[in-house]
Amino acid sequence: MFFAKKSKRFCVEMGEQTTLAARFVALEDGLLVEEVRELAAKDTDGLIEWIKASDGKGATGLAPSICGVYPAKRIVRRQTLDLKRVKEPTYFNEIYTQQFRIEPDKYSLKVLNQGDGSPYDTIKATQKEAIFCGLPVDDINEIQDRLLGYGIYPERLELGTLATLGGLVSYLKFKQSKSPVLVLEMGDETTQSYIVSTDGVDISRSIASGVAAMIPVVQKELGLKDQESAMKLFYSNTFDFTSMGGTLVKKLVKELQSLIGFYEVQTGQSIGQVFCTQLPANLSWIATTMATALGVPQLDVELTPWLESLNIKLGERVTANPPDKSWMGLFSLIASYENAIAEKK
Image (cartoon, rainbow, N blue to C red; front, side, top):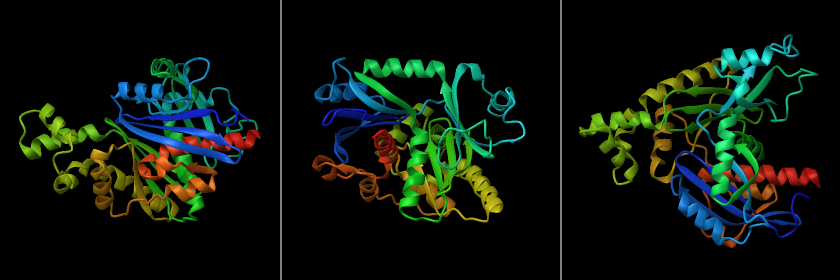
């Protein structure tokens, strides 16, 4: 086993807008999530206080945690491989430099199988589709130092994107869903888009348009004097942007319609639902607007039965106010940990 019975562990998902955290404990037959907490990404004092108030710290004085992060320069992309070249020592580096436009020696990179996320076997090289993922080494060091400053010891540091995509594939299998889902990971400057199904990640694309691109449109539509005023209003949760929502997401929707059209022509399958992640509660209207503009419903996630199927139970303090679908990433991190424990046993 990875940890002793009844020992406390934490899970922290740190996004651009929101930090989600949970405390859980190991049981004989799975995990029990005792408490969850949602904080603004900038509320580091609140996170530190919550960690300090918990009784799960080890001998180091730090809280052992699974941590999911979303650094701006992260890479999670599906790539079609030339199987005749996979064994060439320079082939992957060519993909990094020519396709992804990065310096591979400055990144920590992994190649995974597209269907199940297992490590890609370059010796056998039988899978034509792969998922390339990674983040800058400097980001890893900075994130680890920051977590330690919060009183958190990152036992596992993962790209939250991978956990969320893996969790969604698992959820679709659990629900026996046959419809592909468009996943939108909305950041300030970019939107990472994926289409997933029970077969894994079918397509990926990074779009250079995020939440911040909506601010100038708000300024123009409302006749505000500057973008700073527009930004304050946009994030204040005091104004209903629903009526102008279509205008705010117009640019992004155009890009996504192109992606969806390409996918449907290539596969003959239609997108069944859309799932937006990394949006705080005060911007949840964006998800509704995106679904309406694209003409597809939002994915209605039922977390509790799915988690129970994975031997993850929710404590009374959690079920009193059940987490909604915005917690999919965090619970996917916990689920991956429980799966690792089961395999270890």
